[in-house]
Length: 202
Image (cartoon, rainbow, N blue to C red; front, top):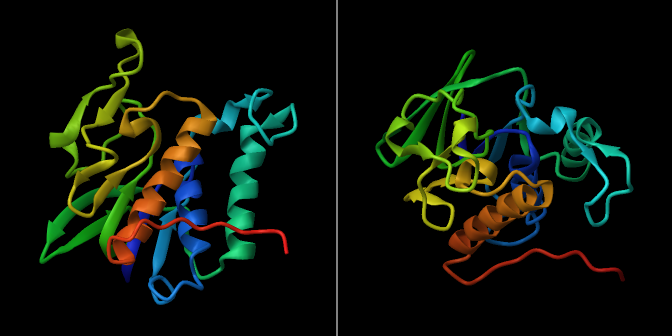
């Protein structure tokens, strides 16, 4: 199966990226793009999170509810985004201008890949080892990692978002990072013209 964008990770950064990309479906430059997201969430730190300090979220909102709500929101509003469940990405390799992504069950190809999994040293996706370094914004003893990047870009068409991009593990920061990557991809599709997607009350 071939995609234009393939997002790895169904946490705050990955889901935010998918939602923004999905919301551009009526734009001429995005309407025919195929978007996929591996919604693996078992290792997400949101599973045990409780939010009392996030703008727009009612106090007491749990991370677990956001994870489930995010998938439902994506499915309801932007069903053209393929949600790939119960699969774990094992490797990424570049060949002939595309990335080949292998999971424990299937293989996919994509022009663009966004890596948005957590920043623990248990992240073991083959093909990314050369980019792994100690996390610049966390305590050394926690042994967190990041994928070395410049403004979310690891190399051409390979992006990283969220804590693995080097950001702190604050929900709003991770979400914003995913949205940032999405707008960079939309800008790329729009011929380099800076692009955002907003909904407005009529």
